[in-house]
Image (cartoon, rainbow, N blue to C red):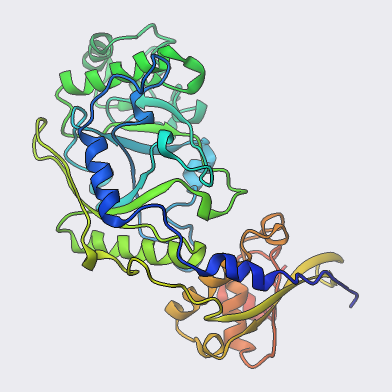
Length: 407
């Protein structure tokens, strides 16, 4: 087998970069900032072409727990979002209250407002706003357009397409054409290209919420998907959160915090969110030290499970062409890891150290974790674990039958 060695001598540098604690503000500061933004109710952010969501309110996404056994992380673009080219969030503000999260979920994450994003974080684009859940998974145009399943004559086309520009006009449509299917309703376009009309449209959406007595269900924003080619450490996540008093929600938030920290080296606080109990009520954002899975200020080990790794370009007999291989040397602790939870931690360190390398990102077939687990099962005593990004994610039985080298 021909080997073309492209030794990455900067492995140690990578570890050093990712090894320390990284965060922008403390847990207490985060809660205070979120409370302040929630209670601020401006019509814009200083000029008519700057909608209020740029600087006020809380943009949040309710999520499932972090990935297990190869599923996507809670902050990853979901398969549904990949298909629809958009991701659903909600907007909570003192004058835009709702009582529960989508599908009665109990945890998720909150975004840093666009006006406060540091240069190291990805900017995101808010595309449209619905005063109530818009049934966006069945719509075109990033979830902002028509839905084939809608029964209304306009098929739920964007509000400006239907010449619906005010809260009154939207509420009239809601009463006449809603018929229990929110896909019949229009969403207000708030993308940057609409300039001052984006501000007017967003304010009309908030006004429709207040005047339509829609407290019983969450509103919806559609955002463009993250740039999957950038490291997870660049995501604009301000905090993870859970509904105050919900033990399951807190457990899931702790899992998210721990996994994100181990994969990125970035510490993100957990905030306890108390939802408003009535339309005129007040949401509360609190920091509790005991909620944190990772103590604020904790230092991340440089090489807890993986001692070193080197990329090698070699001819693969399965594909008949050169493929990138990551040759790993584990620490003694890494070699002893055996349970599913322990292998999760090894894989998290693997992703943190090498997941942003172009050899992985440009050739990702989804099977890196499966190969790692396979080596633990049938090749634990090998001096080096050789795993290839191009390999697919197959079942445990298929991986072992292929000697950890499925094609």
